[in-house]
Length: 256
Image 1: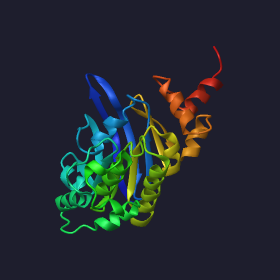
Image 2: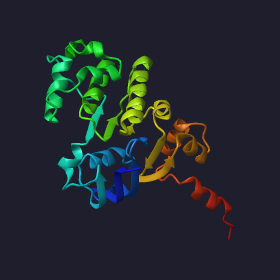
Image 3: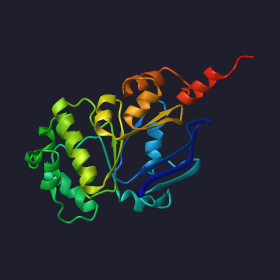
Image 4: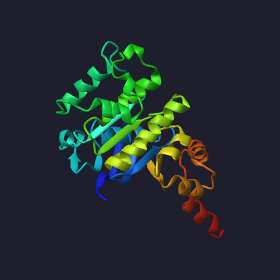
C-alpha cells in the first residue's frame, strides 16, 4: 500500500525538553490509526508537525508524497482536519458553510447532500449554526473535512462528549469512507472504547516516544491488559513507561 504519512527520526524540543523524541511512523493508504497517549505524551506536537503547523528540529516528515515544510501547501491540499472543539459560523446555513469551504479547495459545486448523507444528517443542510447540537456540529465539521476527497483525514477527539447514537454515526461513516474511498484516518482520542471500535491499528506515545504499535487487541495483550483503557491508565501513571519486551528482559536478567 502507498505510504500516506512517513516520519523518520522526528524530534521536537521545547526549552531543551524533547516533546517528541526521534520517532519513526509510517501510515499507509486506507489504514484507520489511533494516535494515543496521556496528556503531555507528545501526540499533539506530533499532530501539529503532521499538519505543518510546527516544524521538527530533526528528522523528516512526508505527507501525501510531499516533504514538509517545503511541500506543505501541496500536502495539505490532500489532508482534511476536524476537531470536536472547533466552532461553526452561527449565522450561515450548513450548506452555505460547506459550499464556501468546498470552493476554497477548488470545488465549484461540491456534492453537499451526498457528504451529509454519509453521516446520516442530510436533513441539516438548511439549518443554521445556532440550530445545531454539539454532536451535529461535530458531524458537520467532519463533513467539511472530507468534501475535497482528502487522502488523509486527521481528527482530534472526534467523539468527545457525543451521545452514543451520534458517536455511532461518526464511527460508521468513517469506516465506510476508508473502505469505499481508500481514505487514511488518523485519530487522536482519550475515548479508548471508541478507538477500539473505530481503528484497526493503534500507536501509543509516552514521554515523546512510541511505546506500542499494533492492532488494539495485540497492544492490550502485549501490556498484559484486557483492553486499551488498561494500557492507557498504565502509561498515564508512569513517566518512563517501559516496553513489555524490556520488562521481560529485566525480569530474566540474572542477579549479580
